[in-house]
Image 1 (cartoon, rainbow, N blue to C red):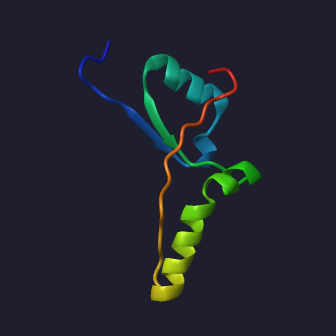
Image 2 (image 1 turned 90 degrees about the vertical axis):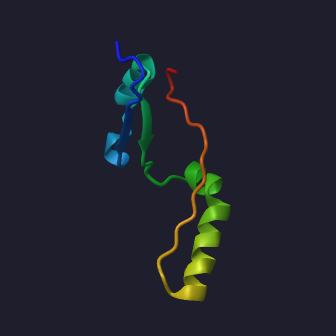
Length: 76
């Protein structure tokens, strides 16, 4: 197949489709996709979002904070 090659799919929330993620998982392709805002996601990123807002208020510069978490498709 693809010996010693790591493939990572990166896309915005438009690529966050169950069929694509299932295919990636079946083929061993890692992925990083944006997620559309929803109440569950807002709870998961609450602390980093507040930290970014505080950093922005202090510096008046754009600020980003990141949080990694595992997400599964309904079928995986």
